[in-house]
Image 1 (cartoon, rainbow, N blue to C red):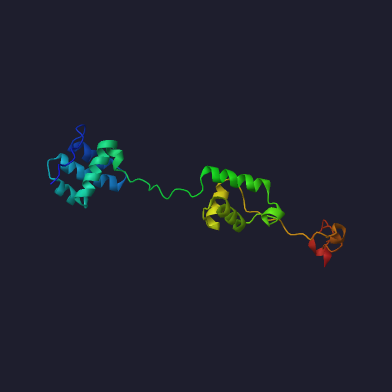
Image 2 (cartoon, helix red, strand yellow):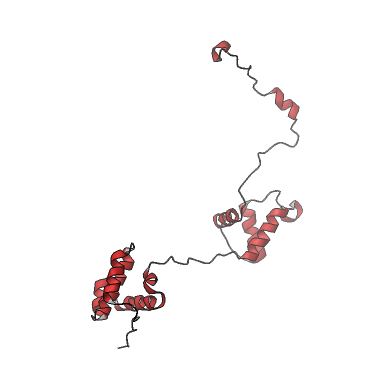
Length: 178
């Protein structure tokens, strides 16, 4: 059997119970009560029964409590997966977007997410999905915009002739038109 990790000396059982009573976090209160059991002189097995966990978890709580105090017993947010695209990748991607595509080189006349995903793979050998790249670009301040298509030979003067032109409304209202 291994030697248990000793608890800090600057707390006692009544102090931990008071902190548990005033805590807004139920999990922190449960952990504080389990450690108060140890301070009261009970075994770690009894503390594990109070906390509803195993002995290894009690040991982890003791280590966290010793380093960070009662705040160490709060639930922490999981760190999550590190981002695939680092700062230098994002910088290069931003420069590419700002310079715009060169049709002869890139084979496109406007950037689409699928084209940028392909460029990231060819340039850095990083496989990202279109959704992920869209989120990255959104965080970088880019918006998914597409211009309304217009035919290159469109005559603006001819378009005016096809517009619906309503007469100006009179002071009497809509009934004048009927």
